[in-house]
Image 1 (cartoon, rainbow, N blue to C red):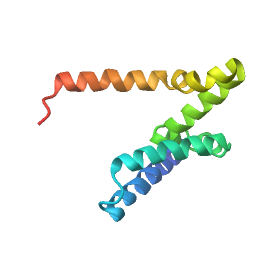
Image 2 (image 1 turned 90 degrees about the vertical axis):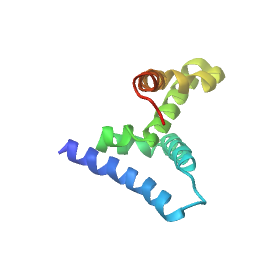
Image 3 (image 1 turned 135 degrees about the vertical axis):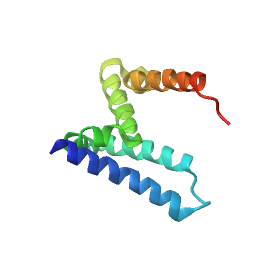
Length: 117
């Protein structure tokens, strides 16, 4: 059942982004939507509203970009508690280091293996 909820919640998050792209045509670019998802995820996480969604939907809430924003916010909050003010600058990057590294490595491999047109 948890797989079904992950699929539904993740799918709904993607549908919302696709609707913004389709309905706003030229006023909102995909870049705006990507940044918006990260910002909304971080904001909802800071308010404590995103964690219940993660607990309910699992990967359906953590895989989309709003989950990346949630991860950044949680890492920053934890680092501020342990390191103080310096945690503001390092916490988010430390928490998201694995995802950032994976994006770089797989992007590099895709660039090597495929010929862009």
